Length: 399
Figure 1 (cartoon, rainbow, N blue to C red):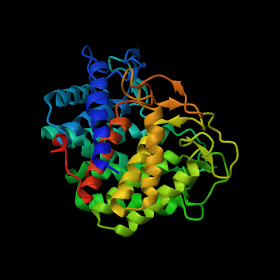
Figure 2: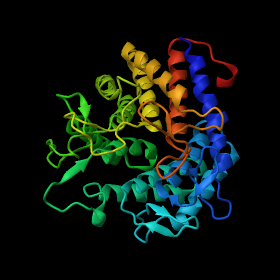
Figure 3: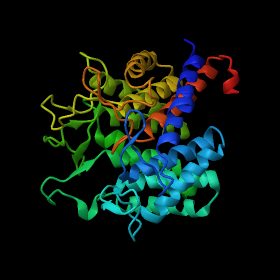
Figure 4: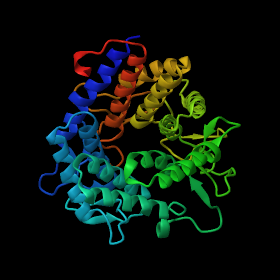
């Protein structure tokens, strides 16, 4: 297996296809920020601005500037987005809205803490790129705001009736495991370590079900199982994504045992979520095999497959577990045969169960400039590390 050729495939798709697509089509020179609702050809079909997608794009171009090449075009693109969000993105208390008009007028209240999570990521990465202390301060302030809301992320916008069926969700502890590493030296080391400890415990001991080998999306406040729609819900993509976060933490802490656990969980979830009939990974499942509440349960989504590829490659790099490579080849083949659009660039996001394009959009309310470029970057760099381990020669483009 030529790992270097594979690395080049991911690198070239990132730098010659996906990033140029967003640079060309998502700019809003009149108002600032980004237009993310793009059809197959990259034409804008809606001008609402979804806050977490704005910050994801800021993060993406800042990250590329920091880690790939210091292209002024990338940095300028990120900075203008950040300045737009500084001006329009949050309420007086610093809580970031969910969506805004093209001009920056708030549309939907800050009910979703994930706007804050990606704001902290974006400002931290932009601080590294610019040295502008204001961005660093915004990242830390937003991170502390997230921690203050950790036990009640939706606050006054929580829809459920208090005290009847109180559940805790997997998404926030999962994201915090990655977010705390993104902020790096901006945080006090004790805060970093305590946040990691809490996140690891939640992911690996509370939401991970040892008897099933998979991760649930929701559990009761005491960690017990809730035999309800929400309690039975499994999102294989979330579990698979979280495992590469855990592997990065384990590498930071030099904990091979934790890496091994993460690899085993990755394989278990993938075997559970893989569609045996049509291929690809199912979006939602019911842990008891009952009809899922989500009507889109059988769709195949771009981000699920991309995050899976990252976890498999990191698992293979760290452990050389053949299961990781065998599954990587299988998921890689499915992904590259179904999601990239060779005619107009970028990737399709939504396939039906048979793997046919369901929606031809390249960006919308949920899909933006994030999972595809982040995943391509992570796979590219991890394949390079695997190649180095196997003493493959580097190409000119990699030197």
